[in-house]
Length: 254
Image (cartoon, rainbow, N blue to C red; front, side, top):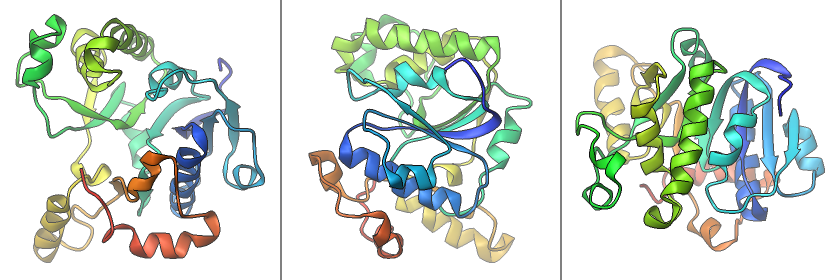
């Protein structure tokens, strides 16, 4: 998709019924706090539910489970925040776009720094210093600069180069591409990509000293229903209130 329809917007890439339903639930949470347009790339036909939530729909034909590597570069926005389908947005996150005035891409750090397993079999990964940690690719802000386009192309190239060695996992190629590209990288605070109960406990601990908004959660990133990964998803959009009230306590955290 070469023509940009807006300066800033959110992008989801999902395929199959379960993951697409999961994405629609995430979009519903997002729209409570954010007014920017939302794009959904999916292999399903457009439905009335999509029509009510999605501003830009595109049908794709993914060939593997990490379809974002192939399609994030097709964003219809100049500034994009990509969100995995297993995210729940609980506050306004529009300031993520503002970061892209000074930086090309933005991520939160992953728990991993340098994985021994891949250091042994991927030379380009092994040569990167430990101090250059992995970032989590499930939530990503990026602009449309030439440096960003080069980085996204490089990510795809290394993903396929080591597809067999990494079993189609995109974190290894992401770290290599960030290291080898010239993009300016911003690291978001963990509250923009909360993936552990420990993060929540820190916020609770510090809010008494610094106020309720200090480190307050913005985005939860979690597998809130393991059945999703077996092709099922029990929630529909009509069940959103139940879904939201149960989500954190019933989560299977990374």
